[in-house]
Image (cartoon, rainbow, N blue to C red; front, side, top):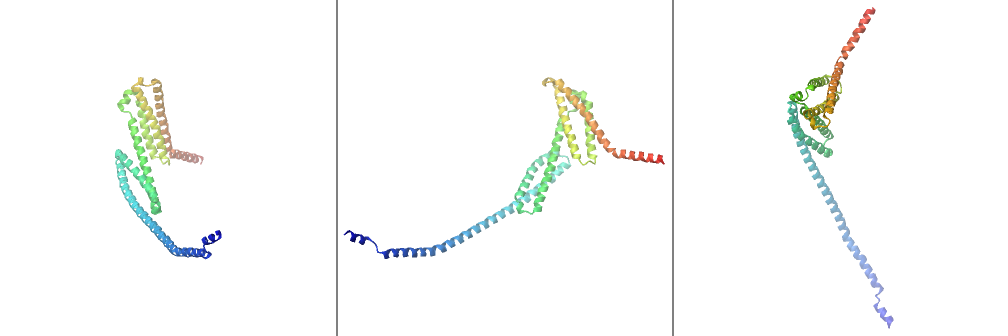
Length: 281
């Protein structure tokens, strides 16, 4: 009884083969549809990527063109302001020069940075010309601003004539000599044929600034000695330093004058030699 029941539940072997064939056939049909769809999808995606990259390149190119035009406009404006700045310098308008220079310096930095960012988009010669011009103009402006500030400090530190005569009559002659030597030394340096004029001028100006600091402190202590510690001792040291500086300037001026007489000494030696030769004959 049980053996018959098991045989009735068991499927025929040919039925399993029908299922296998159906699955294989169905997979082939599905694959025949999916493969073209996959190919079309890949092609569409490739076209999309290409168009997107092309659009990005076009937009980047347009943006670069726009930035280059903005850079040109910025350079044009800077050139006009630099000419105005040179006019202020020529006519000695120091305050106007300083105000405009402080506006131009950030603009020059901006131009330099933008040109660097657009380096691959502009000709190499143009890029180099921009960088060189910006560097040269910036250095010149910095130099002039430092000169203006230095002159301001000197003017502020320069004691009024009445103050010097009233507070420190013992230094009037020394200060006057220092001022005369100072102007003479600057003139000698400017007229010399030395290759290091700027260095000599900078050293001398630095020494003058130290002297002016000492003189200013001396006058402050003289005006109110009770408000400072060791007033008498500090006044004595400052007075000695100022007098020594006067002597140092005298020596510096003598050395500069001697340099002017080198041709004179050479001529004297030549004449002496010729004179001795003539005597020998």
